[in-house]
Length: 294
Image (cartoon, rainbow, N blue to C red):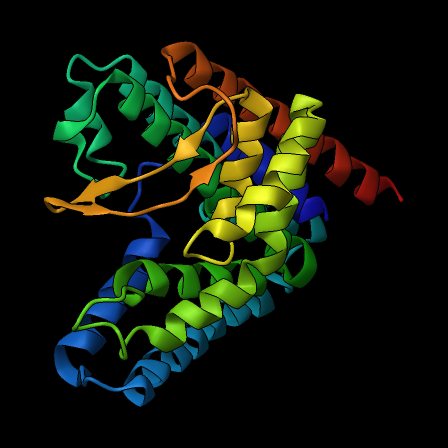
């Protein structure tokens, strides 16, 4: 727990370090494997996932083993710094806040989301920001921290490996429907608990019973078994309605609504979502401190 607490504080204070992000190496391996061994097959996709887990999980285990020969506190410090590189609390916060202050919000937003940003009005931009912030609070912050707390450095590396695989090949397209299915299912399983935990943390941070009701009323409506819960919780906490039909690559995709509040969403709602996220940080840090002291 001391490593998890230290890693979280390091990420919250310093964010990303000016070095190549470790997830990029995972992406390099996925691209290399796909370029040589892609088949329209669940089996080959499973081989990719298992290979990546063993490769990067093995490297993480080797690092843990080598660090164990160092002084205890040096081991803790180095492991915490390495682990912080797999967290995204500060970078996520800064990215969303950066879009709010951008001269061209649609162009800035297009770097964060896959939807067609050029067709969005001001309310649509703000809705997209809140949705991506809430969803990534789970994928980029709570989930990796959850696995770091339970399984240590190996846990966070394995989680981020599978999460990266899902983000690269876990799509329901002609090319990836079968090839990415194993990675997508693995990611769904790993995020079952963290996504719901994120929803609870959002509601606790916002002191919102309405958010909790919204999470468990609307959360299951998302095509992902997990993403809807933090989004619906944030919608309820802010008193807005998220979701709805969205344009991707020129085509409208039917999507359910999350929450039953206001449909028009302003900059103030995004700022409030960011404030909720900051309180989530505080709640998580207090929980980790308590766990260290117990």
